[in-house]
Image 1 (cartoon, helix red, strand yellow):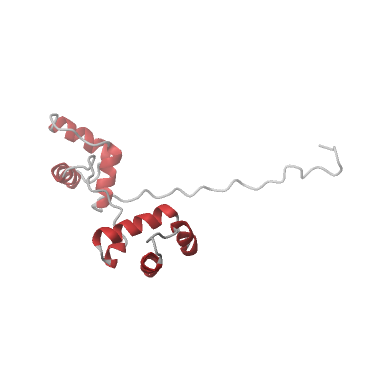
Image 2 (tube, one colour):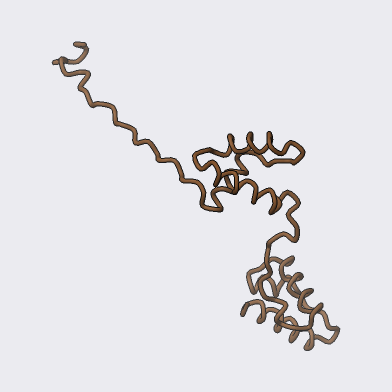
Amino acid sequence: MKERTKFVLEWERRRDDSPDGRVNISELTRKYGISRQTGYEWLERYQRSGSLDSLADRSSRPLTSPTKISEGIEVLIVAAKKAYPKWGPRKLRALLVDRYPQREWPSASCMNEILKRHGLTKPRRKRRRTPLPVTAPFKSCEAPNAV
């Protein structure tokens, strides 16, 4: 934030000192180690609002999520899991599709993510592999090419 503020204030100072009000943005962005595009974005945000507060980081979260699962569907999935705690997402999905065929249901993997988010699943234990027994295949060899 400090670097952005310095960048904008130096741009403003150079613009005021210049007789024609022009500033070499390429030189200024090189000095601050940013791309020209980023420099122009910061300047536009500053000019639009007139405040240095507009240079703060913005959220990169999208405004909408068109594929987000609705709360009602999520509640039904969680309720089904609580009714059948031993069942996994594939069985639960089949049950819900049979009970409510008119609704659109998410995939089993998506249902698994929902259940994980609500703390209703346990990760599988990873099976420990037993190492192969170490044998000496050339134990009886006493000289080269004597196999």
